[in-house]
Image (cartoon, rainbow, N blue to C red; front, side, top):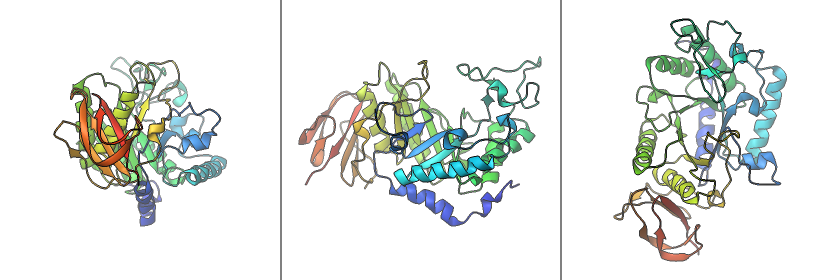
Length: 373
């Protein structure tokens, strides 16, 4: 094993700090995937940002500036940007002391200026032609199977963690193979045991690389059928059981018709609340011309529940209940049909405002119930 930086020698306090922040969260817990909440007119940017408990974005979003014109060749950050990044982190954590911050490290593809035109780290097909990457961004794929490039990616990840601005890194496009296994081993060796690694596995599991991963970014772009919701559920349960601690599983679905698909927002939120200690997001689909992952902040997400007090409990009617300090959560999966649920005690529905023992929940929906004195 090799080490690019002093990450392995970090004190246990660094790890406990992340774990303590995660443990201090009240629920619901929502994350931000690149795009911001944009419906709270008049609210300042940092206040809206800090409503979320985890944020990942490119390093520049946090005030950091890579030290090379070609980002793919950078091995650190400009000193002035380190100071600005630490100031921005301090402001964000002052707004939300439980916030976890991750920088995306590009490894799979990038814009044409990411590397010099003829650089060896661009991926080429058998004829020597560049291989297209993310179509919407016009990106080109990178040769992350190259051992030297893997070391450089790990060096960038280490620079991000050592900056003190972020708590770890996001790796997009995570589909398991031997090259990614080699890459994540190299990154984990470089950044140490306490820094976080989040990967975008969509609705898949990742048994080959699970030992190196703290959480899945579940960018679930398919949520139209009961089978797709069941796959999300199974993958979330697997991630909560098999990934390394502290875990930071992030479940996202996209609207079907509009941001007013409130049953889908509630289903996503309550699936996360009943089956994990992770975070959720309901956002715009990537097919829209605007920036991806933008979303509303919904009153349903305001922190009303406190901490979970028990695991989820399957009910006879096919729904799932979980108890929290301040109430209960019910998730009713697609295909189960509408249900009427008897709660352990009278509580107020955040959806209807009704205070009662029994509450009706539609198919592919969920609700939060707050107990009142």
